[in-house]
Image (tube, rainbow, N blue to C red; front, side, top):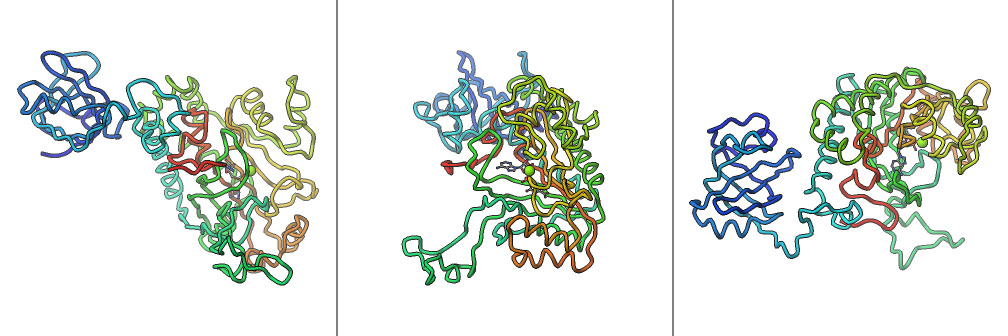
Length: 463
Ligand code: 4AD
Ligand code: MG
């Protein structure tokens, strides 16, 4: 008999169809005349109700084993459900228990558990309704991202995870080494002798695939990366991870306006796709996690984002009759409280802020004619703050060399990046989307550690 996924059965199953399901028991209800067992296989939020009649062979023994968490295979026929709550149910003919789950020790019982508790059982939490919904939506977002770029002729390029250069120049990199930490080789000057290390020089986990994506864009015109990135910033917040996934498109022959247009179309596409393909999960978030999730999605899809220069945003913040914890002044970076104020209270939708002061942005951003600002853009989302960071890139060799030096970096380290400006340079632009922040924004989940299966953060590297 064919094994069918439960999502498919709930949607398309017809009475009298014989079939097999495989999954994990969510709940069991024993009555005198029969027993009901809810089975979930991860394909949907909803479970399939299985009815077991006492005439089933070995009934008593099987019922005893079907506790929450047990894995089962059930073969039977679909019948119309006489009770409210479900259209169809599965009348069991044979039941095979693969693995039991002892109700005395299995941590996921029927009651509601806090997200804090569930983080301590990261190996089991995906079996709950909330995490089932989160990881299905995360999957749908990934698919929509590839779909968006592939339909537009972008090449998915794989940029390295181990890298020798700091793209953001922020010094937040994890070192990659196989030196013996108990006996570190030293130079005569007592510095660490990296010539003895695996790569013969310092190497790090990448903070961004952008520089390498620029290399690829100079050959393929439009490319994107989608992979893990790493930051050793000691930020214990609900929006920071030490390991997170980033999506980084890079377009040759593109300026900041083209970049903003793409980013906006991109977010709209992903929201639309998830609403269409995960309606039950999105309904769940709206009911149980954050009752503005569906309205937010609608707002993203149907309204144009606000576009505003940093200088104008500072003026708005200075005028605000709200007390901020951090100072507001032209030249200072915005804090998340400022970003959220603009997106949540002033415009009530995503805001694309552009043209930030040169001093607070990375070396690769294109310098404006006044030399005070760079052609940067950050997209600020309600509740999240910065969700996308990007810019038009500096394509002029002399200006770029000057900017690298001004930030205390060594141009020699960037020789290959500078070569892109020596040979066939073009105006180009791109951005980076923090994938977990997108999933947070989409689902309303309050903590970024709850939208990635295995979060890595300061002092957190379990599972
Ligand atoms: O603004 P960031 O640092 O930009 C870059 O890395 C550029 N090289 C991107 C580019 O232009 N290709 O990071 C991009 C996004 C941020 O807007 C944020 O959403 C996310 O990455 N991000 C983080 N997400 C989770 N945890 C962290 N520690 C993050 N740091 C940045
Ligand atoms: Mg940024």
